[in-house]
Image (cartoon, rainbow, N blue to C red):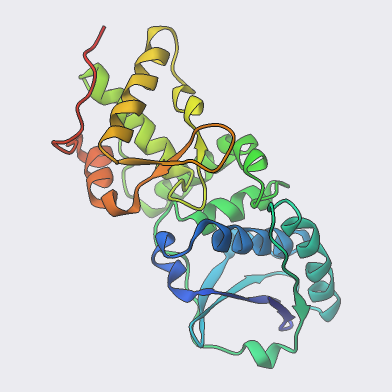
Amino acid sequence: MGIAADGSGLLAVAPVDAALRADPAVLPERGWLLVAALVGALAEAGAAVTELRAGGLDGRLVLRAPGAGEPEDAELAVLAFDEQVAAIDRLRARALALPPELLATGELRAPIGPAHPLLVAATVAAHGGRPADPASVAEHEDDVLAALAARAAASGVAAPRPHEDPDPVRRVARRILQRLDGMGKWGGYHTEFSHLARGFAGNERALAEAVGEALLAAEVLREKPSVGQRHVFLNPGRAGDIRSAIDDGVLPADVILPPAE
């Protein structure tokens, strides 16, 4: 990991696939958490990570955030990275301060998609959270969803409104998928299965859990077995189906939803 100050911002390079800017599913979980820790470090050093841009250098991911461009800012980000990465179990990594000319690259662009995990990490970090720490990400869910709504409004694109779906079971399914998408839960980020029922009241909580099981059975959601609780995430291989469900209310034929009670 390398971090440099270019006079008007901070640059960082990570030994992961530069295709992350366009494809959130390209990294394994630990590779993603390494990047999330790097975003947190840039924020701690004073960079405006909500204006994060990404690109590539010899196939490796390069990030840039404006607002903290002095050499001492890069040194601070290096120290902050050590603290941010400490939250990642069984992962050792360190960052070095580098001359900015070593990170010279082509055009850097915004991550693709309003709910890209890089934007989720940036929002969490900008609100004082630690984007490599799942508990901290969960604490900032409202901040992330508010930022997503603001980006949608700024773009002039009407946000999908699954909560207006007249079918009560399909409405629950679409709301679950929309919230997971909005939080960037595509693999690197995941959530406890029990959290799928958040935001639902009364009988809808049990229905949300049953819908979650149906989405798992159809592999629209995938389960991460290596943690203490059941954790789930959106299946990148079903991204098109998930988008159709959220936007248009068209669920895949292999999703067998439970009956409404």
